[in-house]
Length: 206
Ligand SMILES: Cc1cc2nc3c(=O)[nH]c(=O)nc-3n(C[C@H](O)[C@H](O)[C@H](O)COP(=O)(O)O)c2cc1C
Picture: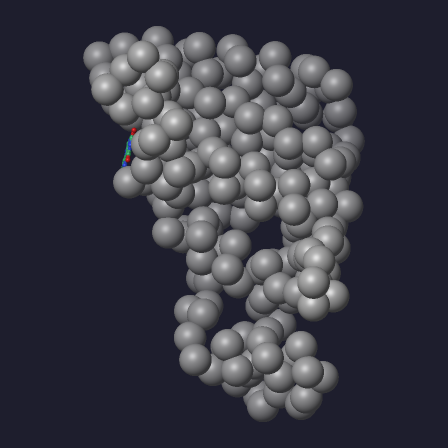
């Protein structure tokens, strides 16, 4: 099995990385032949999606020739999308940042999510260009997002729905989420230990 492990927290001893690592360890125990491709959005040197890259995108869509700089940027985008397409399983750790996702993860999505690389579009309908069996996502957040609390998820949570929607839309067939609240209050240690135990169960489930 080929796992694409996407790290989106800059903290390598943080909650999302710790819990995703436990998940991957359990997957390795179950599937000893597992290969892990780690894509750390903070270390990947992601290009800016600037004016020239946008120009390259439209030239590419229209089948026009790219200049050397555009071609270099496009090669990187193509390679990122390929790593997503080639995975059998995606393991993704996502801390909540300002009720949403870290901007570097959004940068990866904006770079890789190109028509015919991750999705298709016929002028009316969107379809998947990826066929990945499963994604296990570890969402961590400092606060509590229960509907009975001061920050109910139905209003404050702009993290989970977007990532799940994105992965399903590009063609991940089975998207499973482990959502862990309260990673910054006094019970953080206990919450993370609970997250590790839940990650092991998630990895052990078919
Ligand atoms: C820039 C930044 C913004 C954050 N915004 C929120 C937030 O809106 N809501 C929340 O519950 N926690 C927020 N947190 C807390 C993190 O989600 C929490 O500490 C999480 O465990 C971080 O994941 P990590 O340990 O894997 O880095 C924020 C943390 C940072 C660094």
